[in-house]
Image (cartoon, rainbow, N blue to C red; front, top):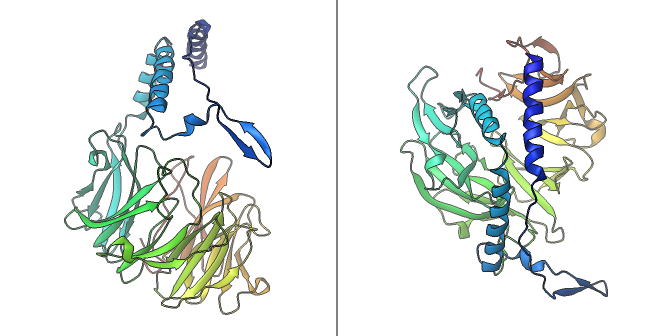
Length: 402
């Protein structure tokens, strides 16, 4: 079997090499006389025109079309391409489901028949009930260019905040879906990027983050600066959203705000760039000012859950493989933090608090190991998995067994 696989790989490589020997004739790319002065020096940038928005510049549109013609003309001559495509299609063509989750007395899951570009969302009233199609993102546009990038159900199970992107853009629009009817409401939030959505306990609305509307034609070319956190009340226009937090002196910081499940506190996480190093602050729900818990970008602090004023975090502070700590927000100084689950020999991945147990997923020898701990950090058991592989989806509520 191994020699057959090796032979197949060698044949494909030979065929690809033969195709590579063919001379490729590239289209001519024009050069402009554009220069700019940087730090007192004139710098030539003859291809600056290629940074123009392809949706608006005919020159860029034609250049992309010419380059694609060359590229795909070359790829289509590779003899191994179709057999490889068929093999990959055969391997990928199987029905698959996401792990179900429960919110507001309803169950939700995603299903893919095998070759759908995006999985379809379903809901049902009981785990053994009949699934009802809720949202098929493949039908949001005729050409299939609108992608579902986020889906957060309200605590009462009546609505969902849905984020959508078009044509692969990082820009997202957030809409509100009525779970009962499967129809979108009038809410339409724009200029959203790098943002989650977090409902409040009363399901009145949700927190999200966005940028100011880009000036002129810089929507797809300008740098994004000064992200702001907002609260959106369902049924209101975006212009009426409440500004929750901004930093006018920090253009590169981004923010996320979430309310704890008990509705008593709101947590603000601040990031700089893509590093998993966060600043963390909290406030009582309804208050204005946030109180710092962590005021520097030094380590990861991923919020897990809370028990009143005791907040649980997964962190790599003094534990590069990860551990779980508890912080009493009434005494938030580091010397008062408590270690619940110490660093293990294996890397700690996801952590959830379900049924009053910490469910921790570790990576050991390239396979998942799942262990359950009490809120005090005592090991209860290791979850028996059906075999070697990756396990995920251990989410839920602290007060529920599912």
